[in-house]
Image 1 (cartoon, rainbow, N blue to C red):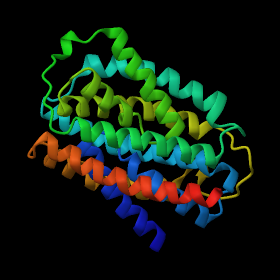
Image 2 (image 1 turned 120 degrees about the horizontal axis):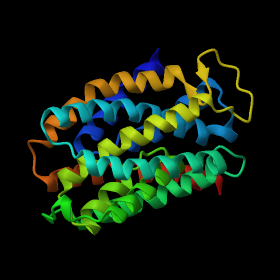
Image 3 (image 1 turned 90 degrees about the vertical axis):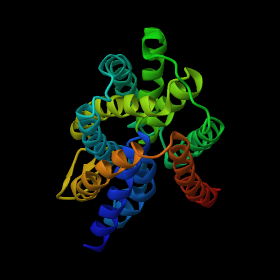
Image 4 (image 1 turned 90 degrees about the horizontal axis):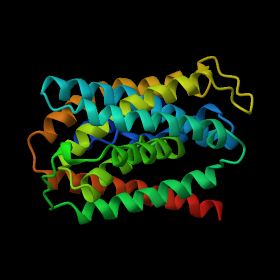
Length: 273
């Protein structure tokens, strides 16, 4: 029950970050899920696969709640979400099938990818924090949106962070889309990608036998459900806060959380050396 409570609190925080920034909460989930998995006896060699699967599962529900609020507020961009999301599905499922859910993807590689991604995210967030972009979405080429989807799908599969970690910087910093529009699009795309990834992971067969009554495929129900329940509380709060504060403040809050997770993952990586 104590572990469930900590996961529930992490779910609230992840949901809040999801609604506030548009990244799906994975930056919090990948921080706490490995601890819970080790506690219940998940084999170390498949911690990355279980972490990604359960993070994506929780991300689906937290981003879904946030999307419903954006749709109600008429702040949802269906065409852009669909174009980016379809390409994201293809790349995420292909990487899960042929690389991530194989013996080649270790916890060492997993942590290196997370650290590199988060450092990139931190730098790009701070660089663009005070910039205001007004590029209309109609001006974006479809092939560019498809490229964003490919990158988002790949990162979702490799890290469990949920695509938004690259979707937002690509839309905001490179394509000069306003951060709040980029966040809304990111949430929509994350919901689509995470839904299909979750279906894939539910029917996937882990390589190492792990006897646990509440595990289906790579999804461990007590872990993911605790995060989901917390996300139902945190996501609406994050959306409401994002509507009331300047875009630059959102960027700085995001940067603080990134710094904390980077520090934790660097410490874990050093332990492997």
